[in-house]
Image (cartoon, rainbow over all chains, first blue to last red):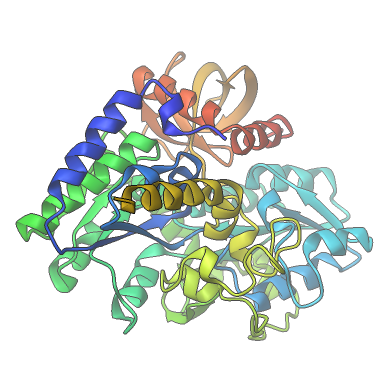
Length: 379
Length: 89
């Protein structure tokens, strides 16, 4: 395992950590949610929690697109993949996500033609190369990824690639944050906002969090120093009683986002009335479906799908992890029945899932932290 | 899958379709630039995600991000493997 201390950023990280510690007001706790799974990965991979004072707690949010796809949608994906005429294309992350009867990987082992693609454009190429097969692309992801699906759909339409379809599961981050903010379980003092989603949507969509919910937001980059600086900026806001949307990642994220990407989404997709999120339940207007004029390329129109709501396994507590109500190690099956090799819940599948990140990187650091804390407690 | 990866534009493939060839830590593949305001010039740095350039970045940011991603190890290696398998047209 390699930690922050092994990098040239060592001194800067230590200085930032000191400045953060100096901001902690006596008797006060600071609970900050990092919305994006990429941040969760950085936090555990680089031992950020070890650098923070005990009063600052990082809570993991719902921003892992693999983690939030509900069981029923995964069942539908597998049902499509198992059709004889179908070549089912997917990002590698979705292969091991458990559904009611195994994963896409299990379906592949049973003979389904499931292929990993790097880009939706690769799925479109496979469709061109296999005109006698139906090629379906399993589209998942937040606003970062939706524009790529959108441009691919526009290409498919322009070239009249009739044997290509998209099973659209793109979700939007703002309604999920709204659901968390409206939750009675809420215990968050501020948000570390997602960097790459914000390159597309810009800063404006977060303003309601500051204005209506009186919580500060800092949109952050993904390096350890970015996350530490964002924590520092949030603590400054909280201590000053300010609630603003600040941009720590200004070297990439622009205030207005990416207008081309937003236009491509608007041209091909529309908000669904409601969509189920694993663990969070149904959230109004929280996902994108294809516009009716693209029905010919919509897998939901082309195939009769069960579209059922399927409950998560009873033992799984991904929902509470995704809402930040419990930490990964507080789940009943964490690291025992549920491991990255044999995941029960989605948070253990993706490397950006809180449970997998903690399982792979966080445990040792936490143990070391506990030892250090115990050593400090000895007079 | 959410990684944004710095890539340098090394050739124009098809201006009409917005396709350019980029170099990512030595892996050269075609990506789509239609999500950018304008096609990036040769030598420019972009952040790519699932076969699309998502934003222009400067060289300092690109090199710094690449160093960070390389430090991640396995997730970046997986991303590069998947990129290697890509044949975007």
